[in-house]
Amino acid sequence: MPNDSKPSVLLTGAAGFLGAHVARELLKLQTFSVLALDDLSGGFEENLPDGVQFVQGSITDASLLASLFAEYKFRHVYHLAAYAAEGLSHFIRRFNYTNNLIGSVNLINEAVKTGTECFVFTSSIAVYGAIEPPMAEHKNPRPEDPYGIAKLSVEMDLRAAHEMFGLDYVIFRPHNVFGEFQNLSDPYRNVIGIFIKQIREGAPMTIFGDGTQQRAFSYVGDVAPAIARAPFVTGARNEVFNIGADQPYSVNELAEHVAKAMGQPGHPRTYLPARNEVLHAYSDHSKARTTFQLGTQVTLDEGLARMAAWARNVPLQPLKGFTDIEVHRNMPPSWTKYQTDRK
Image (cartoon, rainbow, N blue to C red; front, side):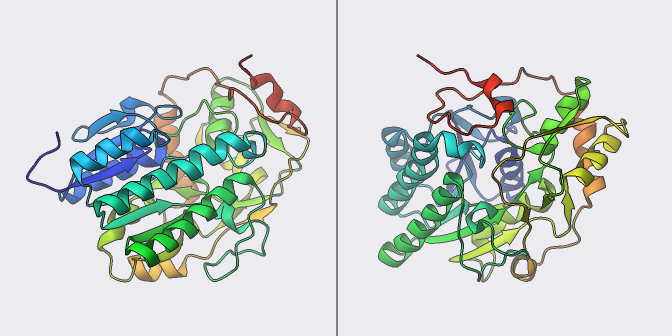
């Protein structure tokens, strides 16, 4: 049981990269007991800080969620659990919608039924699709992959739940977040983690296309504190916020910075056939900067230095391919070696 002297909050995806940082920020508030929920499909229990209560389980388990909400009457829900692989989501559509949409609806249902005060949701810049950057909250989203579609659907459902039941929410659209505790063994997502693992193993860094596609890479320390504080910030409730780094870099430029941070400047690269992806994606953050009074951002080089100091010593896990690929057509050839379908 959590500390009965404090109200409880639920943090899903707590053993994952971003969740582990938000858990630490919640503990700093010293306001709530934190119940950390994670199915450990992409996270690691050792990422969790002391002081949270851990339950291993999935947001797709409606019965488990009902029992947890009934027991703890969570004041706030921080929903970070997701399988956040935009490119792969085209090939695992059923899993994507079950995990990222239906699992989220399970949480919203229980939040409504048990009187949760505020539901904090990490959406994604993927909801915008290929609109002209910088992406801004007032622009109409046009997601181009099932992952972004699922995220936008949850955003819409939260708005409907607010209108019908009075459930307050805060929605964040982070993008390309990196830092300590990132899973270095996921071959489909988190390009900085992929580069670091390849450098450590002496393999060339792999880049899809010509490497001119642009992203803004956001250090986790500039993102997690705002997520934790969201229910308590004046003007944040029932709003959507882009959050992350302002300065875009090409993937080619990123490779140079990562190699330098790892002490391997000039590390070789291999270029692979281009994927079907948005070429230029970065956001405007003026709304979040004003509402959350955000300070100076950590530079890309400083963030990479912090991540590299951690990543040089963390044990490397074997690359783990996704099981049960649902659609094989048009899958990037470099991903086929990770397929471990169950028959």
